[in-house]
Image (cartoon, rainbow, N blue to C red; front, side, top):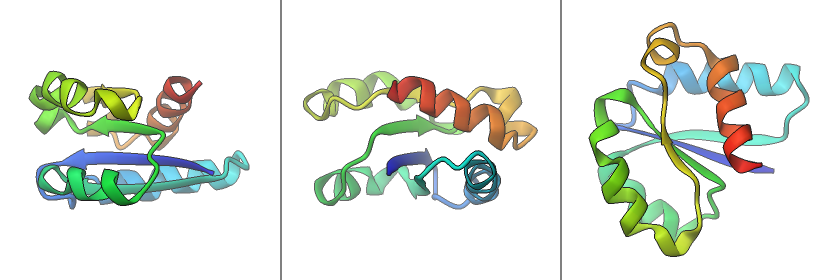
Length: 103
């Protein structure tokens, strides 16, 4: 099971993208738990759950370097979701990017 966490301002704007990613994961038989959280909940989630990749919504991309430093010990790939994929709610591209980062 791959745990894919999307981070945005309130955890709500990415909910549609999460749904689209889950649909693609099912179609491709990818065992993934995909969820969205608000930026201020990341600490709590990482303390209680193994996360394999953390993707930042475009609206919080400025947090990337802060998160990379803060969560260095977690050894989690951290990247931003491409603006075009986010805007088009392209669950296929975002899922593929997450899986590529996981390796």
